[in-house]
Length: 344
Ligand code: PHE
View 1 (cartoon, rainbow, N blue to C red):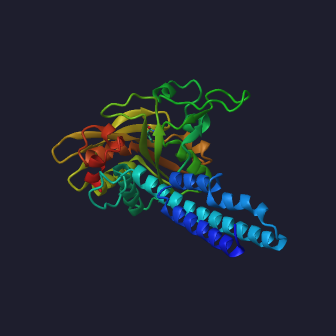
View 2 (cartoon, protein in one colour; view 1 turned 135 degrees about the vertical axis):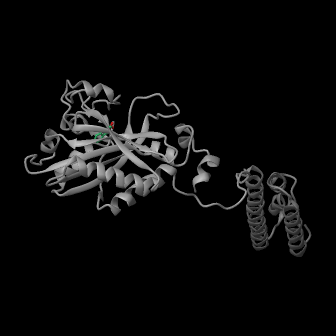
View 3 (cartoon, rainbow, N blue to C red; view 1 turned 135 degrees about the horizontal axis):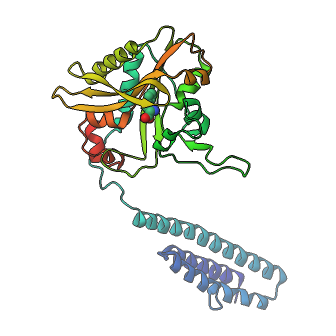
């Protein structure tokens, strides 16, 4: 090294070459090998550094060392900057190449809509609100008391076995087995409404119910019912028949009529089954009804000597099925968009 000016130009040349090699690296792997070369024994900077010791003048040696150090820092910064740029580009490319096109089945923008059971429930509520009823709801997980006992079905009552009940496992060892269950009908809400409202009561109570059942064209283990009660002074069976007929016409249309057939339910006396008749003469079974049993009124905290009442309950899914001529009730629950969109 003949003079400091030669050294300075050699450092500047090393830096220029290093920076152009860095700029020329096209990917992170390429840049890494440039980086390794620049730090290696044969790199211009390493060679210059090894020659520092030969400079006699201490001042000169110090400033040469500082110049080499500054050059090394510039190179290092350039590597860092280029590396960040290359990695970001590679990451963006990877994301783009791994992205999945999930839009293949979407042919047009569509709004969702309510399910036909929800639509039927809302229409039912509208019809009954129009008849002066209020809407109430109760829990899906019920106690034996509300689902059976309060409805005039003591522990040994044979009618209990007709409700293929699904029980909830006891939460602790001291909880009586089979005392908590998934409600098998909406009738327990009768009791809850009577306990919390004062007569006169005109209420409908829609909701989900559960029974151990194998799904087929007309049955599902989870389905929907709407319960109705009227508790007032002087309520008779004629009022019940009138409400059923008014509802049938309002919901299905004027060409429909209804009929009541004698039946049995532990919670109503007398009890009836009600059917509706299509314009073509076909009868469709809808649900049960009757005058509320005095024991049921009592369980709801109402004096049966002062008040009488009637109750009815029917399946909403079956009604939606009839209204829309659905062949198989299971179709309503497979969530096939081709089915659902017919009713949007
Ligand atoms: N809870 C009865 C059932 O699920 C229907 C019903 C309700 C009958 C109210 C009479 C009165 O079968």
